[in-house]
Amino acid sequence: MEENNKLYVMISKTHTGIGKAIRMFSRYPYNHVALTLDSSFRNWVSFARYNRDTPLYGGFTKEPVERYFADETADNTVQVKVFALDITKEHHKNLSELFSCAGDLESGMVYNFFDIIAATVGAKIPVANAYTCLGFARAVLQKDYRSIKALDKDLESHLIYQGPLQELVSDSGNRTDLYFTRLGFIKGTRKTFKSFTVLTLNTIKAKSTDKISRHLNNKTVNSSEDISD
Image 1 (cartoon, helix red, strand yellow):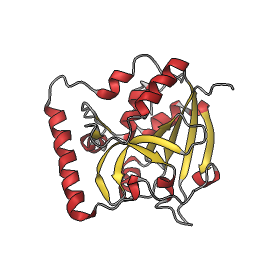
Image 2 (cartoon, helix red, strand yellow):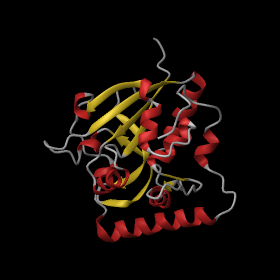
Image 3 (cartoon, helix red, strand yellow):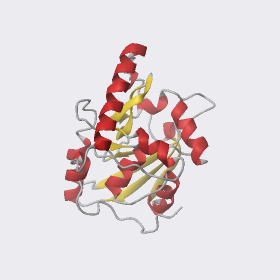
Image 4 (cartoon, one colour):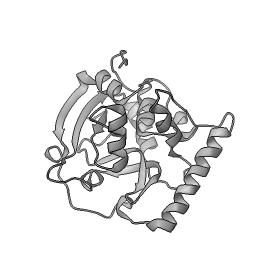
């Protein structure tokens, strides 16, 4: 059987409140980035919220495709662009090990809300073990993308699909993923506070070891060098 040593990158228009806010500030139709090695496009990884009802509690998480359909309506389909990037066998193994860590709530890897706030004024706040979805893509692709628009432009020649997600992969109707577990206000507030505490501590720690960076050595993909907006 021929090996499929490819990394897939998907940018999407999600219909969450935060997603809409990001698109409003960025003035770009896509707001989220996810990665996968899965050629069926059913299982993705990214930095995002863990639970649907707790938007500020997030980190390195698995994203089964059913997550994307949760907030979809007949008038608001999930529009996506998917890119396929060639990687080496060694990089595939390396990324497979890294992606398998997604969903570990005790990993200490949290969503970098400081960075997403800074992005509204064109700045970045890098924090060890804390990423946004775009920041994670930057780390894996080893490119300093300033925006999803820049990533989109850079990977243009690798585009393999553009359109509604449901025309690429079907919704199984499975709603057992962690994302669909309701935390409620009290538990959600506690989890959010803990996450922000970890983020703050990681921000002020000097020379913290970044767990993602330990897995990433050389260039993982072949893409163009132009990453300007």
